[in-house]
Image 1 (cartoon, rainbow, N blue to C red):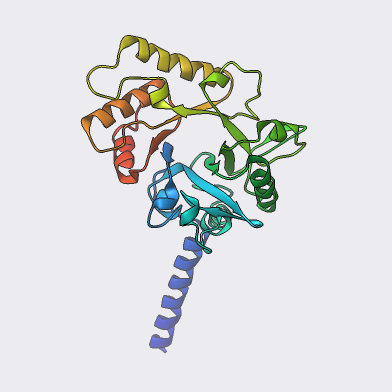
Image 2: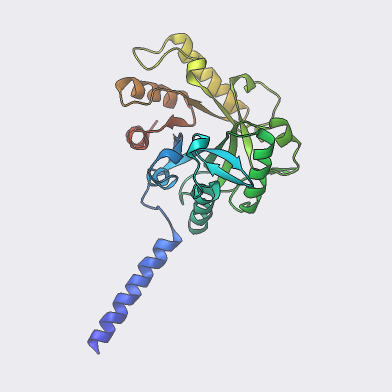
Length: 277
């Protein structure tokens, strides 16, 4: 009889553990609201490596082939199993389901940046239909403004801006460039300013940042935030070095919202070491 009770007790404990595990996913991970994974699909475990490192923003390039969307850096890299649904949308929906309506249970809104590599209008229309199937997790934009959900989709690359602006309801915004800082477009259409660092700054992290560039960076962030937009730069130094950390420190200090990297562990360690900033 004692053995039976022991077995029952073990089973109850296991069921309790399994139940807790299915309810909340990744609760041991510290969410890093300013970490953006560039070209995430090139990692061993697309999306999952990002989530395990606490990144709150991820980027995927897509190609329209037939009626479906495939994730790859180049067309020659496309394989049948690497669809946007399978690599990102289905896992995100499942994660949100088990995390009280969020990607990270104690985190902020997650950003999925989708870089369109094929024709703007055709690819976006296909994407729009697919995102609508996942409307329970994606922030939407309609006549009554923005309806926030767990994930904010941002369209980059070939962006059909005018078509998106004409939609009554959509499930994504698009990114802008620095030239859009003072544009009349709303933050609902352009929620993020995203641009190539090297097109606007000469400083690469070596030595002191020139005073003019120091002030310019902060002015960019202030103008974007005043319009309700966030800021990200790509093509910043990404090889482990003092220069990279110096530049990351400046981005952090200036209030740049998303720091771009392919080095998940490197940026994770940097942000954890600088959590008070």
